[in-house]
Structure formats: C-alpha cells, structure tokens
Length: 343
Image (cartoon, rainbow, N blue to C red):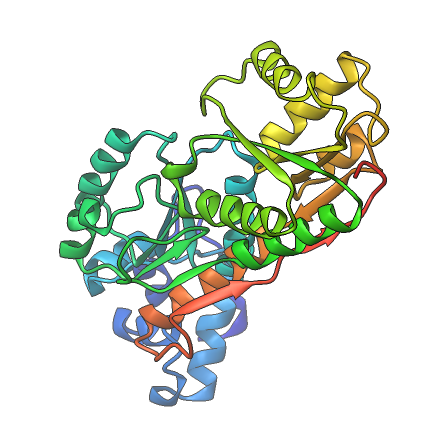
C-alpha cells in the first residue's frame, strides 16, 4: 500500500479490525504483531502495521485479550488499612514495579476488619486477577481457606501466619527491635513504655514487643505495654496511663510507639502537654514517611522500608505468575534505626 494511502480513522474508536484493513493484512497478522511474534511476518509488514498503529493512536484492548486468552494483567493488593501510611507505602512500592512490567495494581482495603477481610476473600472469585499481594488482618492460616482453594499466586506482606503456606516478605521485626532495646539500654534508660494496638492481632507487633522486652528486661529494665484501640486513639487516656506508670518513680523512661500513626499522635500529644524530650521522657517510633520529620526532624526512628517491601514482593509475585522458582520463600527486608535527639 503506498504511503499516501495511510489515513487516520476519524471519531470512532480504533479497533484491531481497522488496523488490519488499513495495513492490508489479516486480523491474525495484527494480533501476532501485538504479541511480538515478528518472525511470522516480513519486516516490511511489521513496519507497516507499526506505522498504522502509531498514526491512529491504537491501544490494544487488554481486557478483551485477557478474556480470550483466559489470562489477566491485573494484580490485587489487599492491605490491612488504607488509613495506615505503611499500607499505602506497600502499595506504592508494588505499583511502581508492576507498572513498569505491564501489570495494573488494584487496591483492596480490609479496613482492619476480619469479617470484611473474609468477605473480600470470597469476592476474589469474581475478580480476574493474575495474582494477589496481601497484608492480612488475621494471622491464622485456617482463616484463609477461600484463598487457598482459589489457587491464586500469592505473596504475604508485613506479617505471617501461624503455619507457612505462601511466600512471605516482611521487616526483620524481632532483630531490629532487639537493636532498639540495646540502644535504649546504652542511653541509660531504666523503664520502657510501649504503646501499640492489640499485640495479639499481628505477628509484626508480637515480634517487636518480644524483641524490645526480652532485650531490655535482660538488663534489668522495667517494661510496660499500653494497648490502644486500633480505630480510635484517645490521647488523654494514653497520657493519663503514662502518667500513672511514671509518677511514682523518678526513673529515666523511654516511650516507644510501634506504628507511625501512633507515633504521630504521641509526638503531637507530648508537644501539646509541653513534655520535653529526651529531658523528661525519651521517645522513639516505627515510622517511614517524611510527615514525621516535618513534625520534628530530630526524632529517633525505626525505618522499615515499606516501599522496598512492596517492590520486592511484586517482583516475587510476578516470578510466581511466570512459574519461576523463587530463591527464597521467606524474605526479610532489613529495617534501620535513625538516631535523633529524642531518645
């Protein structure tokens, strides 16, 4: 077909049939071109199809392709709670990688609700997903029968179940918490107060509490754990509890927040109450975003690198989808302690 016979198609959406007609080839030939099977056509034909596609801004219908091939280019990420900055950072890391390799990532929110999580797991049967990244609310494998029966390639993020079934990627929670415990000891603290949502709810919290408490208690420090409501932070009540724990002793006390939203609340609370740290009380928290540094650039932090966790999890999931053997089934991303002047 001569060059002057190439025309853009006005108004109507361009279809694969239009491309085939303009390129004077069969629909099957255009399909082979779109799937990269260029060895089954001449270089001239491939160049002609390429030019027609570009001139008409043709974008293949991925949904139609997936339905026909019984495949999907969509991956789901089910996070524990979108209100948690950590969960959103997991999504961000995974999405950046998956976009580059041709997958779309769909965000699914369990909202820290086990019943909601169960319903969402059932609903997965109605979604055409290539795989699933999950930051589970529940920590018993028995609660995930629906997902097991679905047979979907799956990666577990940030926490693990009571029995191993799917590959897991998480922070080295216990190890970094022991390091934090040692730092607290080295700074001369005598008492530690840990503020957290219910410890039994997630393995990540259990490991953090275990790491800190075992380390500091072995050096003779006193430890307390204050558990707060995951959906509602009552700052005044927490402040009163801390006061009751520390009022009767003139001991050097460190306050530890196990999650960034709690850390933000506690730092704000201490500022409002005009508590000087570390003079009156040391404070440290598990946090990763720039938001905490805006509040106070000198805070001591435990950075867990959720963006990296999300990215590596996505890489491992794509490998599963492609039936590649994973080098490891349990991967730990090393967290780090950023020392400020608050501890």
